[in-house]
Image (cartoon, rainbow, N blue to C red; front, side, top):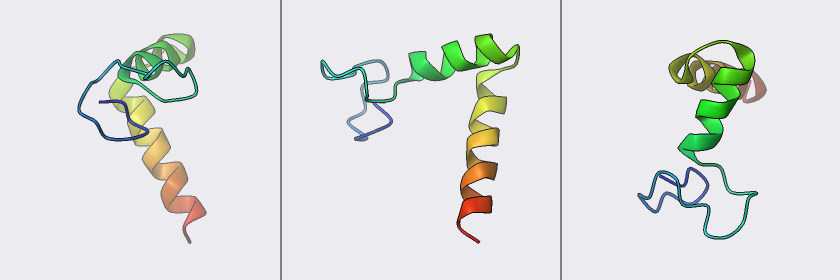
Amino acid sequence: MCLSCGCGKPNDDHGDQRNITMDDLNQAAQAAGTTRDKVLQNIMNALCYLCR
């Protein structure tokens, strides 16, 4: 889904590139030479660290 709003449309940025989509995660994974799952895991780990 548009990860920013939760609309259920995985790659719809609603005309605003600042919204995060699954395509963005895929591109981030490719840039880092890793998988989308690992990118998601890294994001979750960072959020957990920041919420301490």
